[in-house]
Image (cartoon, rainbow, N blue to C red; front, top):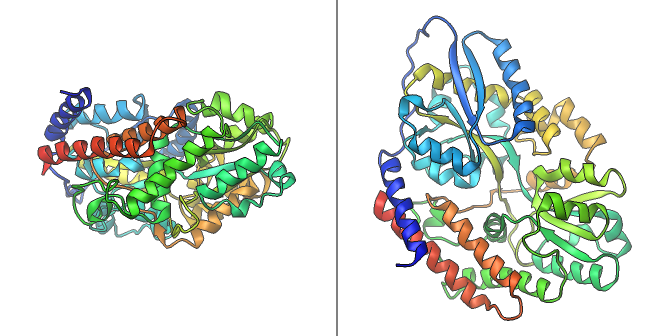
Length: 458
């Protein structure tokens, strides 16, 4: 039996025991809260710097009322946190937890979480910031039935950063970088024209950017509308039509780029290798997420203007109507403590207030999740004095029709891993690796993961 099959079987057995219970409704909260302050524990995978920013919001919340007291606890990496959620007894779970939004399909089906929608429906005080959340981020927060699952805590977004001064010298209009086809042409101009050594470098979370590029193109790569209209049962990478053609063109971008020696060697660390190359003007662009802004601006230190373009589509014919969301969302855990869970919801609302969501976004480089946060004084100062270039992303958000649909299912991690392997294959051996074989390998791995998951959970 292949190693992957063994691994996936073990994963499916774990998921079977975890997900069999299905999504629970928000518990009924007694009208009278018990006396004293209720402790609300929040599990995160964010590191010390971001936890420090979160702590400021927590302190403000704790000081604003006496019903609840929030404490944040670091639990390791994203995978380690979710593994702990899955293996922890119900009464030992926190009231709040972080999860990457691309894994929302896992949270939707997990018995360790409850939808936030039940709390929203019972909230007589209202949640105005929810109504003012950017449509793309709100849509990404919903399940297939339109219920709010969680709320953005640190909104990231796939973008291409660029050296604006260098592109101007090379005669490249950043507004033209709307597809990976146009990015490849820009890299040719930059490198072959002697403006820099590398046209572009890549954050190595290639599976996420793969999904984002397909979504930005407007291509639905899985049945049941990528899981929005029912459980995903089939990956469509080998459909012989639009999906397969788009995947081939996307992988072809990487193959041509590295065959022509236009990119930073794939696998380079964005923080310790690519950003220093950009700061030294040895690399012109970087595919990353918007939360990398602070590190990049610090490294460049005003030596040149840094710009950013919203996530490109695969081709110039791409739809580019929706926005692929990324980053961290806050979810309510089902620990059986009704008032702690209610406190989690109250904190979720508090953290979404314009002044606090704007503060966190400006401090970290994440996007403002709502117009309230965008319009806050602290974020407007960030826009004006620190990173004016970010305005291009908000222009795109304001003209967007909503979320660019990413796959919603319980094997999102397996999908990302298979996609990443396909990209790595053509990058590391651009001369001999075949795109057709890379697509088939990814298709087969994803299909096997889907079938094992569905066998255990449907």
